[in-house]
Image 1 (cartoon, one colour):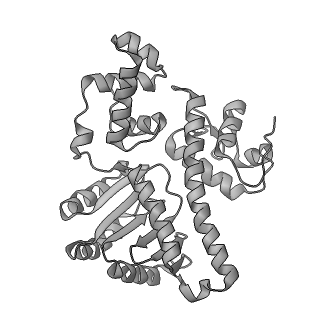
Image 2: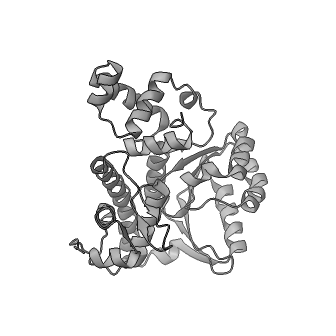
Length: 323
């Protein structure tokens, strides 16, 4: 088993290369190959890859992951995903730098409060939302339960009625949850916007008042939340969430830009999923490669995707790959 030379900052592409080369690996084996003791980060990246469909759980052993049979070029996928992870990691790095800087200066304690327990956190989230002037962002790493969405319905409606723009980013798996779709259909006419993305690393709520709440944990008794009231940190989180929002995909299919897919576009998407190149697709459809690239670029714009891998994920979710 070969190893990859890395430091404690794990490169997602190294993890994927190890799994592709070896066939299947456990998180601990990946850590050994990457010379890393940071098993938590490795497991987080593996979870992201599982959500993307780039890795799958081994059918023989639960803690092993494997690479599916490639339908598209792994080289292109690796490059695109590494660039995306790097861009998001850089933005989060800026946030961490500001937090560290203020921590060294002793000013974080004056601008931060820590809360423990589900009920207290829900109350504080409601207060943060009530103080928003025009925009409230929410990023969720897990799909909310039916009970959580039902309890949020009245409060969200109240914020929308006073003119606050609510933008929520859910993980891609939300598209398979009927209760999430029902909630989105109920809230869309009132103005709430819900999108999905393959990268939702943490639970965050941020407003245009410079308030940010970062929530860690799932247990009702031990979940903790940090409320930060600092314009600099608030601006960084808002910039990160706005960038992620622009690259996310609307949850509901009612968006005209997503529903008007032509037969030619469907054919091109399906050929891409088979791993065909632009030149190959052009020859089969009697079109110039630049025309194929123009069609793909337009699909990227209309689906808010930045790579062909992400376009493939959206296409699969929406049933465009079915014949």
